[in-house]
Amino acid sequence: MNKIKEALDILKQFNIPKKQQNERSALALLALVSLNEKDSWKNAKKTLIRIHDIMQFIKAEYNREYAENSRETFRKQTLHQFEKEVGIVERNADEPTRPTNSPNTTWSVTNEVLRIVKTYGTAEWNTELPNFLKKIKRTVVRYKVKRGKNKLSITLDDTEIAFSPGKHNELQIDILNNFRKHFCQNADVLYVGDTAHKMLYLNKKLLGEINMEIKKHGILPDIVLLDKDKNRLYLIEAVSSHGPVSNKRMIELNEYFSMFEYKKVFVSAFPDFREFKRHVDDIAWETEVWLSEIPNHMIHFNGDKFLKRD
Image (tube, rainbow, N blue to C red; front, side, top):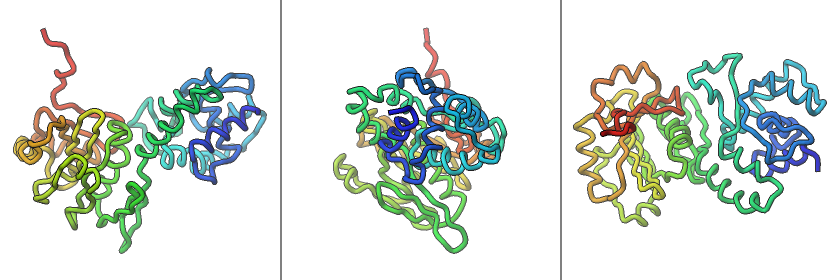
């Protein structure tokens, strides 16, 4: 089996959409891990690469030439699906603040993908693949936005959840998609609120397993996530009009969830720096701040917890 066929086999086993199960996608994967025909998969490496350079690599190593105007095809019909549909690549890992339309936009496989493709063709691949597939399924939340009178919705655990339209709920979708992806991949969604009807989603099965009953809609944060493996309960406020996790809010949430032994992680989520700066004076110490426009970074409101004290 040649490298293109092997790359295509990997993508099929990653359960990528059928429209992306083609030679172009296989070649893109090979460029992303910098493998030529003679290389072994164990030599795969993480490469931050522009679309132009992906096409140049394919031409040089696999003698497949794509016209320059094919860059949009690679971006829209391959890399976007790798990123959004299956979560196997990252955009601008080297510079998260880079503008969306920048010609210097880079693409790279995730660390998890790099680790598993290095095992392709070995017994370890067959052992690790099921766990990897579970992880990426939980990491990626497929969502669609419909405007006007239509709904704003996400698909969560095979259930479509319809939000009322608005910036607040768009931010909540970003939290469910990108915050989870970068900071708590294995966390389950316990609760999601909505500006129109607060109790939008409840994970009744998991709530029953941990013997948790959720009441008092007005006390709840916008999103509650649970990572049982790390013993963490994420209490997240989506700040687009209402306030962040203030001292008063943190006391309320601590009291409401006091009967549970999970470590509480308080997060104020903002769409961008501009909104963050409007509320910065109200944010409580010992909490976290996340910005949707820079999804793979966090601001810790007490940095000294990462420093050793004498």
